[in-house]
Length: 335
Ligand code: KG4
Ligand code: ZN
Image (cartoon, rainbow, N blue to C red):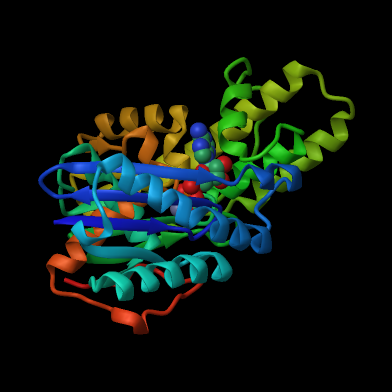
């Protein structure tokens, strides 16, 4: 069965075709570069851009795979959490297709899709495991006892890790999205140049906080005045190290507390090279296996939605035309 996955929860219009016996057949993304001019995603512009992109991306995707809509076994669409306008455009499009083609339709929780993006490499998720979700909108630790069964064990009290990267990049005049540009600038910087705060490391729970780091970077930048390229690199490297230290420390502590043997990363920030390296090393030190999605499936993509939709459809779910969107909330269990 070929499943179509539709992702429009933020600023990427991404559609993919997935079949369990073939893996990802095709995955096409139209990224909205227009937001770069504003230093962040403008919701109204994002919705309009999804409206423009959806049909051309859908047509190109089917053409690339050499199939028609009639060949689809079902449709999955991210219906939350995310920007309400962007979600409504994606869900409306998915409903039209489901109705027109007479196919089953399921709503996919965007965070569950990120968690399961780890399976797009071909290996099933090893459970029980701890999964660190780190993206522009979310920073959370989940205890996954089996596929479809999720317990939220930690979350951010303010900014998400990706948001911290984006805001720090803006303070340094590096552009948007911030993660990749901060990582690049950090390559020629000293991660120990500035001792930025590592919030929550001394607490017993598994929550995160990144707003203090953002403030510390702002104060440092203001105190420094004119920044040399080396300053920008040192601040980038030191801030990135502070984020990585907190994410690694909390995740490994959580895995040990819950006594699980597998740790997974996912979400846009999981593309960060130093984070992947540090998490792998820390997991090795405590005898826990470490996994991360293929780089192309860290940021938002239709493939992770299609794979998750395939599981939901196989479990017998069909949300039909009553499917609604939601803007926030943790993954709910279904198995
Ligand atoms: O998962 P995603 O595409 O969207 C959300 O669901 O939020 O994540 C986007 C976030 C952005 O904040 C971006 O700055 C961050 O992922 N990101 C990175 C890297 N690539 C993307 N952060 C750190 N290092 C990267 N290489
Ligand atoms: Zn995402």
